[in-house]
Amino acid sequence: MDEEIYQKRREDPSLKLFVVLSKATRTISDLAQEDMVRYGLNPTEFATLELLYHRGRQPLQKIGERILLTSGSITYVINNLEKKGYIKRVRAEHDRRVTYAEITGEGRDLLNEIFPEHWKELDDIMSGLTEQEKKQAIKLVKKLGLQAEKLKK
Image (cartoon, rainbow, N blue to C red):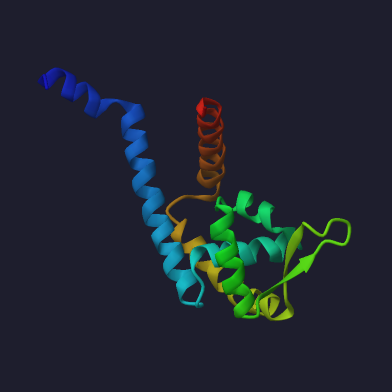
């Protein structure tokens, strides 16, 4: 490749932003996942429990959409959480084809116990930015994500 073109590509802000965002996301995700594993949960189990804790009973298909899982994967996660006693399945009264997942008392107790520590861990992970910088980053990354979403086919 021609040296001049190579240099331009190395200095291209779009490419550089992609690399920086990718590396930061990977590192942040790895640290957050390490924290979740301490509590005997994998990231999708934790995300599912957190969703049910904060949003209440959810149809199984909506859980997959909200935490970006396929229906087969969400069934596996729900089965695991159900075996651990953290959630239960509830059939919809209005439509027997719809099944909800609902957090149990045991699941709620677990999150009440671990979430404050997890929140502190996330705060530590994000401590490289000031509060104002975090708010700015949220706006910018959201704007970037919305534009990228428009480009999906």
